[in-house]
Length: 396
Image (cartoon, rainbow, N blue to C red; front, side):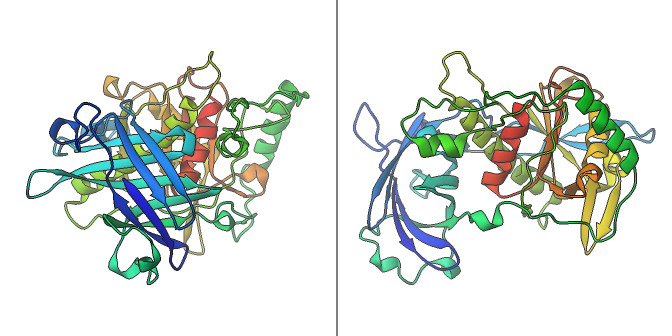
Protein backbone atom coordinates (compact mmCIF):
# COMPACT_ATOMS: atom_id res chain seq x y z
CA UNK A 1 0.00 0.00 0.00
CA UNK A 2 1.16 3.52 -0.73
CA UNK A 3 0.77 6.15 2.01
CA UNK A 4 1.28 9.77 0.99
CA UNK A 5 1.45 12.18 3.91
CA UNK A 6 0.31 15.81 4.10
CA UNK A 7 0.02 17.94 7.22
CA UNK A 8 -3.41 19.04 8.39
CA UNK A 9 -4.74 20.60 11.59
CA UNK A 10 -5.02 19.44 15.20
CA UNK A 11 -2.04 17.05 14.91
CA UNK A 12 -3.76 15.33 11.97
CA UNK A 13 -2.20 14.44 8.64
CA UNK A 14 -4.15 13.21 5.64
CA UNK A 15 -2.72 10.24 3.76
CA UNK A 16 -3.45 8.26 0.62
CA UNK A 17 -3.40 4.48 0.92
CA UNK A 18 -2.63 2.36 -2.13
CA UNK A 19 -2.19 -1.41 -2.03
CA UNK A 20 1.04 -2.55 -3.65
CA UNK A 21 1.10 -6.08 -2.22
CA UNK A 22 1.81 -8.66 -4.93
CA UNK A 23 1.77 -12.41 -5.21
CA UNK A 24 5.26 -13.86 -5.33
CA UNK A 25 4.17 -16.53 -7.80
CA UNK A 26 2.22 -14.57 -10.39
CA UNK A 27 3.27 -10.97 -9.82
CA UNK A 28 -0.43 -10.10 -9.69
CA UNK A 29 -2.41 -8.58 -6.90
CA UNK A 30 -3.52 -11.11 -4.29
CA UNK A 31 -7.18 -12.19 -3.97
CA UNK A 32 -9.44 -14.76 -2.28
CA UNK A 33 -7.46 -17.00 0.11
CA UNK A 34 -4.59 -14.48 0.00
CA UNK A 35 -6.77 -11.53 1.02
CA UNK A 36 -4.88 -11.48 4.34
CA UNK A 37 -1.55 -13.07 3.39
CA UNK A 38 1.47 -13.63 5.61
CA UNK A 39 3.13 -10.51 4.24
CA UNK A 40 1.87 -7.10 3.14
CA UNK A 41 3.88 -4.20 1.73
CA UNK A 42 3.33 -0.49 2.30
CA UNK A 43 5.23 2.49 0.96
CA UNK A 44 4.76 5.45 3.28
CA UNK A 45 5.45 8.55 1.19
CA UNK A 46 5.53 12.21 2.15
CA UNK A 47 6.79 15.21 0.21
CA UNK A 48 10.26 14.64 1.65
CA UNK A 49 10.78 10.92 2.23
CA UNK A 50 9.62 7.35 1.54
CA UNK A 51 9.39 4.66 4.22
CA UNK A 52 8.93 0.99 3.36
CA UNK A 53 6.70 -0.93 5.76
CA UNK A 54 7.09 -4.67 5.37
CA UNK A 55 4.30 -6.13 7.48
CA UNK A 56 4.22 -9.72 8.65
CA UNK A 57 1.04 -11.36 9.88
CA UNK A 58 1.03 -12.25 13.58
CA UNK A 59 -0.79 -15.57 13.69
CA UNK A 60 -0.27 -15.81 17.44
CA UNK A 61 -3.24 -13.44 17.84
CA UNK A 62 -6.55 -15.16 17.12
CA UNK A 63 -9.01 -12.51 15.84
CA UNK A 64 -11.84 -14.79 16.96
CA UNK A 65 -10.70 -15.44 20.53
CA UNK A 66 -13.42 -16.52 22.92
CA UNK A 67 -15.26 -13.76 24.78
CA UNK A 68 -17.00 -14.17 28.15
CA UNK A 69 -19.20 -11.88 30.21
CA UNK A 70 -18.38 -12.28 33.92
CA UNK A 71 -21.65 -12.66 35.82
CA UNK A 72 -21.99 -12.78 39.59
CA UNK A 73 -23.94 -15.60 41.22
CA UNK A 74 -26.07 -15.14 44.33
CA UNK A 75 -23.28 -16.47 46.54
CA UNK A 76 -20.90 -13.87 45.08
CA UNK A 77 -18.91 -16.36 43.00
CA UNK A 78 -18.03 -15.43 39.38
CA UNK A 79 -19.69 -17.22 36.47
CA UNK A 80 -18.40 -17.06 32.88
CA UNK A 81 -21.12 -16.55 30.28
CA UNK A 82 -19.67 -17.32 26.82
CA UNK A 83 -20.72 -14.99 23.99
CA UNK A 84 -22.06 -17.28 21.26
CA UNK A 85 -23.44 -14.61 18.92
CA UNK A 86 -20.15 -13.06 17.81
CA UNK A 87 -19.58 -13.43 14.08
CA UNK A 88 -16.24 -14.59 12.69
CA UNK A 89 -13.98 -11.63 12.02
CA UNK A 90 -12.39 -11.28 8.58
CA UNK A 91 -9.33 -9.49 9.85
CA UNK A 92 -5.75 -10.14 10.89
CA UNK A 93 -2.99 -8.51 12.92
CA UNK A 94 0.32 -7.42 11.41
CA UNK A 95 3.67 -6.09 12.58
CA UNK A 96 6.73 -4.34 11.22
CA UNK A 97 9.20 -4.71 14.08
CA UNK A 98 11.89 -2.59 12.44
CA UNK A 99 9.58 0.42 12.24
CA UNK A 100 7.50 -0.15 15.39
CA UNK A 101 4.24 -0.64 13.44
CA UNK A 102 1.39 -2.81 14.68
CA UNK A 103 -1.78 -2.77 12.61
CA UNK A 104 -5.21 -4.37 12.35
CA UNK A 105 -6.09 -5.18 8.72
CA UNK A 106 -9.70 -5.92 7.77
CA UNK A 107 -10.86 -7.44 4.50
CA UNK A 108 -13.96 -5.63 3.22
CA UNK A 109 -15.50 -7.37 0.19
CA UNK A 110 -16.37 -5.09 -2.72
CA UNK A 111 -19.27 -5.64 -5.14
CA UNK A 112 -16.94 -7.47 -7.56
CA UNK A 113 -15.86 -9.87 -4.81
CA UNK A 114 -12.41 -8.39 -4.41
CA UNK A 115 -11.02 -7.64 -0.97
CA UNK A 116 -10.40 -4.04 0.00
CA UNK A 117 -7.94 -3.98 2.86
CA UNK A 118 -8.82 -1.43 5.54
CA UNK A 119 -6.22 -0.72 8.20
CA UNK A 120 -6.32 0.71 11.68
CA UNK A 121 -3.56 0.91 14.23
CA UNK A 122 -0.21 2.49 14.90
CA UNK A 123 2.96 3.38 13.07
CA UNK A 124 6.15 5.27 13.89
CA UNK A 125 7.52 7.83 11.41
CA UNK A 126 10.88 9.29 12.30
CA UNK A 127 10.76 10.03 16.02
CA UNK A 128 6.95 10.39 16.23
CA UNK A 129 4.17 7.92 16.95
CA UNK A 130 0.88 7.98 15.03
CA UNK A 131 -2.56 6.41 15.10
CA UNK A 132 -3.84 5.66 11.60
CA UNK A 133 -7.50 5.32 10.54
CA UNK A 134 -9.84 5.99 7.67
CA UNK A 135 -10.33 9.69 6.96
CA UNK A 136 -13.64 11.42 7.53
CA UNK A 137 -14.86 14.51 5.70
CA UNK A 138 -14.39 16.78 8.69
CA UNK A 139 -10.72 15.89 9.21
CA UNK A 140 -9.42 15.84 5.64
CA UNK A 141 -6.72 18.45 5.22
CA UNK A 142 -7.39 21.42 2.96
CA UNK A 143 -3.79 21.05 1.81
CA UNK A 144 -4.24 17.44 0.69
CA UNK A 145 -3.77 18.35 -2.97
CA UNK A 146 -0.12 19.17 -2.23
CA UNK A 147 0.51 15.42 -1.85
CA UNK A 148 2.25 14.34 -5.07
CA UNK A 149 0.49 10.95 -5.41
CA UNK A 150 -3.21 10.99 -4.51
CA UNK A 151 -4.22 7.53 -5.70
CA UNK A 152 -6.01 5.20 -3.32
CA UNK A 153 -8.12 5.81 -0.22
CA UNK A 154 -7.70 8.72 2.16
CA UNK A 155 -6.59 7.95 5.70
CA UNK A 156 -5.65 10.13 8.64
CA UNK A 157 -2.59 9.99 10.88
CA UNK A 158 -2.97 11.43 14.38
CA UNK A 159 0.26 12.28 16.14
CA UNK A 160 0.71 11.10 19.72
CA UNK A 161 1.85 14.14 21.67
CA UNK A 162 4.57 13.68 24.29
CA UNK A 163 2.97 16.45 26.34
CA UNK A 164 -0.13 14.29 26.81
CA UNK A 165 1.70 11.10 27.62
CA UNK A 166 2.58 11.27 31.28
CA UNK A 167 0.48 12.56 34.13
CA UNK A 168 1.75 15.13 36.58
CA UNK A 169 1.36 14.55 40.30
CA UNK A 170 -2.42 14.67 40.26
CA UNK A 171 -3.86 14.45 43.74
CA UNK A 172 -7.36 13.43 44.65
CA UNK A 173 -9.21 16.46 46.06
CA UNK A 174 -9.62 15.27 49.64
CA UNK A 175 -6.75 13.83 51.63
CA UNK A 176 -6.92 10.06 52.02
CA UNK A 177 -5.53 8.56 55.19
CA UNK A 178 -7.16 5.12 54.97
CA UNK A 179 -4.62 2.34 55.57
CA UNK A 180 -1.69 4.73 55.27
CA UNK A 181 0.05 3.33 58.35
CA UNK A 182 -0.52 -0.27 57.20
CA UNK A 183 0.85 0.47 53.73
CA UNK A 184 3.87 2.32 55.11
CA UNK A 185 4.64 -0.63 57.39
CA UNK A 186 4.28 -3.03 54.45
CA UNK A 187 6.70 -0.96 52.41
CA UNK A 188 9.15 -0.88 55.30
CA UNK A 189 8.97 -4.67 55.64
CA UNK A 190 9.42 -5.13 51.91
CA UNK A 191 12.46 -2.89 51.78
CA UNK A 192 14.06 -4.70 54.69
CA UNK A 193 13.76 -8.02 52.82
CA UNK A 194 14.59 -6.63 49.38
CA UNK A 195 17.39 -4.06 49.85
CA UNK A 196 17.98 -1.72 46.94
CA UNK A 197 21.36 -3.18 46.07
CA UNK A 198 23.24 -1.54 43.24
CA UNK A 199 22.75 -3.48 40.03
CA UNK A 200 23.89 -1.87 36.80
CA UNK A 201 22.23 -4.45 34.57
CA UNK A 202 19.16 -3.33 32.64
CA UNK A 203 15.98 -5.25 33.31
CA UNK A 204 13.66 -6.55 30.56
CA UNK A 205 15.22 -4.62 27.71
CA UNK A 206 15.88 -5.14 24.05
CA UNK A 207 19.36 -5.90 22.77
CA UNK A 208 21.63 -2.92 22.13
CA UNK A 209 23.11 -4.68 19.14
CA UNK A 210 20.82 -2.83 16.72
CA UNK A 211 22.50 -0.08 14.75
CA UNK A 212 19.37 2.08 15.05
CA UNK A 213 19.79 3.60 18.51
CA UNK A 214 16.42 5.38 18.28
CA UNK A 215 14.70 2.01 17.77
CA UNK A 216 16.39 0.68 20.89
CA UNK A 217 15.42 3.74 22.93
CA UNK A 218 11.75 3.68 22.00
CA UNK A 219 11.32 -0.09 22.36
CA UNK A 220 13.13 -0.67 25.65
CA UNK A 221 10.67 -2.43 27.93
CA UNK A 222 12.02 -1.16 31.21
CA UNK A 223 15.34 -0.03 32.62
CA UNK A 224 16.66 0.45 36.13
CA UNK A 225 20.01 0.75 37.89
CA UNK A 226 18.56 -0.72 41.12
CA UNK A 227 16.99 -3.98 42.14
CA UNK A 228 13.32 -3.29 42.75
CA UNK A 229 11.29 -4.41 45.77
CA UNK A 230 8.65 -7.10 45.26
CA UNK A 231 5.95 -4.63 44.28
CA UNK A 232 6.24 -2.12 41.49
CA UNK A 233 5.22 1.52 41.95
CA UNK A 234 6.18 2.99 38.60
CA UNK A 235 4.51 3.66 35.23
CA UNK A 236 2.69 6.95 35.71
CA UNK A 237 0.68 7.55 32.57
CA UNK A 238 -1.97 9.96 31.37
CA UNK A 239 -5.26 8.09 30.96
CA UNK A 240 -7.30 8.19 27.79
CA UNK A 241 -10.71 6.50 27.77
CA UNK A 242 -11.50 4.04 25.01
CA UNK A 243 -14.80 4.81 23.33
CA UNK A 244 -17.10 1.84 22.81
CA UNK A 245 -20.30 1.99 20.80
CA UNK A 246 -23.06 0.68 23.07
CA UNK A 247 -26.07 1.84 21.05
CA UNK A 248 -26.73 -1.19 18.85
CA UNK A 249 -27.03 -4.62 20.47
CA UNK A 250 -25.06 -3.53 23.49
CA UNK A 251 -23.42 -6.74 24.60
CA UNK A 252 -22.70 -8.22 21.17
CA UNK A 253 -21.38 -5.13 19.43
CA UNK A 254 -19.47 -3.86 22.46
CA UNK A 255 -17.96 -7.29 23.07
CA UNK A 256 -16.79 -7.49 19.46
CA UNK A 257 -15.20 -4.05 19.63
CA UNK A 258 -13.55 -4.80 22.96
CA UNK A 259 -12.06 -8.01 21.58
CA UNK A 260 -10.72 -6.23 18.51
CA UNK A 261 -9.31 -3.34 20.55
CA UNK A 262 -7.42 -5.48 23.05
CA UNK A 263 -6.28 -7.98 20.41
CA UNK A 264 -4.58 -4.97 18.83
CA UNK A 265 -3.05 -4.08 22.22
CA UNK A 266 -1.73 -7.63 22.68
CA UNK A 267 -0.35 -7.52 19.13
CA UNK A 268 1.64 -4.43 20.13
CA UNK A 269 2.92 -6.12 23.30
CA UNK A 270 3.83 -9.20 21.28
CA UNK A 271 5.77 -7.05 18.81
CA UNK A 272 7.92 -5.54 21.56
CA UNK A 273 8.85 -8.90 23.05
CA UNK A 274 9.42 -10.49 19.65
CA UNK A 275 11.79 -7.62 18.84
CA UNK A 276 14.27 -8.85 21.45
CA UNK A 277 17.41 -9.81 19.52
CA UNK A 278 19.05 -11.98 22.18
CA UNK A 279 19.24 -15.48 20.65
CA UNK A 280 18.63 -17.03 24.06
CA UNK A 281 15.33 -15.25 24.61
CA UNK A 282 12.17 -15.94 22.67
CA UNK A 283 8.91 -14.61 24.12
CA UNK A 284 5.57 -14.65 22.33
CA UNK A 285 2.51 -13.11 23.98
CA UNK A 286 -0.83 -14.51 22.79
CA UNK A 287 -4.45 -13.77 23.60
CA UNK A 288 -6.21 -16.71 25.26
CA UNK A 289 -9.65 -15.18 25.86
CA UNK A 290 -11.40 -11.92 26.76
CA UNK A 291 -13.35 -11.61 30.02
CA UNK A 292 -15.60 -8.59 30.35
CA UNK A 293 -16.60 -7.31 33.79
CA UNK A 294 -19.78 -5.25 33.77
CA UNK A 295 -19.76 -2.61 36.47
CA UNK A 296 -22.74 -3.99 38.34
CA UNK A 297 -21.15 -7.46 38.42
CA UNK A 298 -17.63 -6.41 39.38
CA UNK A 299 -17.49 -7.72 42.94
CA UNK A 300 -13.77 -7.01 43.05
CA UNK A 301 -14.48 -3.34 42.43
CA UNK A 302 -16.95 -3.31 45.31
CA UNK A 303 -14.29 -4.85 47.55
CA UNK A 304 -11.89 -2.06 46.63
CA UNK A 305 -11.63 1.45 47.97
CA UNK A 306 -13.56 3.49 45.39
CA UNK A 307 -13.73 7.28 45.60
CA UNK A 308 -15.49 9.88 43.46
CA UNK A 309 -13.79 13.26 43.14
CA UNK A 310 -14.63 16.02 40.66
CA UNK A 311 -16.68 13.70 38.48
CA UNK A 312 -13.96 11.04 38.30
CA UNK A 313 -13.87 7.58 39.87
CA UNK A 314 -10.68 6.52 41.66
CA UNK A 315 -9.88 2.95 42.68
CA UNK A 316 -7.13 1.92 45.10
CA UNK A 317 -4.97 -0.32 42.96
CA UNK A 318 -3.69 -2.66 45.70
CA UNK A 319 -7.16 -3.65 46.87
CA UNK A 320 -8.37 -4.05 43.29
CA UNK A 321 -5.35 -6.18 42.36
CA UNK A 322 -5.74 -8.41 45.40
CA UNK A 323 -9.49 -8.86 44.98
CA UNK A 324 -9.27 -9.74 41.29
CA UNK A 325 -6.37 -12.10 42.02
CA UNK A 326 -8.43 -14.04 44.55
CA UNK A 327 -11.11 -14.65 41.90
CA UNK A 328 -8.73 -15.46 39.07
CA UNK A 329 -8.47 -19.13 40.03
CA UNK A 330 -12.27 -19.47 40.19
CA UNK A 331 -12.96 -18.72 36.53
CA UNK A 332 -12.78 -22.39 35.53
CA UNK A 333 -10.94 -24.43 32.89
CA UNK A 334 -12.27 -22.28 30.01
CA UNK A 335 -10.10 -19.39 31.20
CA UNK A 336 -6.78 -21.23 31.52
CA UNK A 337 -3.97 -18.74 31.05
CA UNK A 338 -0.49 -17.85 32.25
CA UNK A 339 -1.37 -14.30 33.16
CA UNK A 340 -4.48 -12.12 33.31
CA UNK A 341 -4.29 -8.43 32.39
CA UNK A 342 -7.14 -6.29 33.73
CA UNK A 343 -7.82 -3.02 31.89
CA UNK A 344 -10.10 -0.41 33.45
CA UNK A 345 -11.42 3.08 32.71
CA UNK A 346 -11.28 3.97 36.40
CA UNK A 347 -8.43 6.16 37.62
CA UNK A 348 -6.00 4.07 39.68
CA UNK A 349 -4.28 5.47 42.73
CA UNK A 350 -2.09 4.29 45.56
CA UNK A 351 -2.24 5.54 49.13
CA UNK A 352 1.42 4.82 49.81
CA UNK A 353 2.79 7.29 47.24
CA UNK A 354 0.63 10.31 48.00
CA UNK A 355 -2.17 9.45 45.58
CA UNK A 356 -0.21 9.72 42.37
CA UNK A 357 -2.13 8.48 39.37
CA UNK A 358 -0.86 5.01 38.47
CA UNK A 359 -0.79 3.70 34.91
CA UNK A 360 -0.50 0.03 35.89
CA UNK A 361 0.81 -2.40 38.44
CA UNK A 362 1.95 -6.01 38.77
CA UNK A 363 3.77 -8.00 41.42
CA UNK A 364 7.22 -9.37 40.67
CA UNK A 365 7.55 -13.12 40.06
CA UNK A 366 3.81 -13.68 40.33
CA UNK A 367 3.13 -15.53 37.08
CA UNK A 368 3.16 -18.97 38.72
CA UNK A 369 1.61 -18.01 42.06
CA UNK A 370 -2.17 -18.51 42.38
CA UNK A 371 -3.87 -15.21 43.06
CA UNK A 372 -0.86 -13.20 41.88
CA UNK A 373 -0.71 -13.92 38.14
CA UNK A 374 -2.56 -10.73 37.26
CA UNK A 375 -1.81 -7.08 36.52
CA UNK A 376 -4.07 -4.00 36.39
CA UNK A 377 -3.93 -1.04 33.99
CA UNK A 378 -5.73 2.16 33.15
CA UNK A 379 -6.84 2.38 29.52
CA UNK A 380 -4.76 4.93 27.61
CA UNK A 381 -4.23 5.54 23.93
CA UNK A 382 -2.77 2.63 21.99
CA UNK A 383 0.92 3.40 22.44
CA UNK A 384 0.72 4.19 26.15
CA UNK A 385 -1.38 1.10 26.87
CA UNK A 386 1.04 -1.13 24.97
CA UNK A 387 4.06 0.48 26.67
CA UNK A 388 2.63 0.08 30.17
CA UNK A 389 1.32 -3.45 29.58
CA UNK A 390 4.68 -4.56 28.15
CA UNK A 391 6.54 -3.06 31.10
CA UNK A 392 4.33 -4.60 33.78
CA UNK A 393 4.22 -8.00 32.08
CA UNK A 394 8.01 -7.94 32.16
CA UNK A 395 7.87 -8.06 35.96
CA UNK A 396 6.15 -11.42 35.84
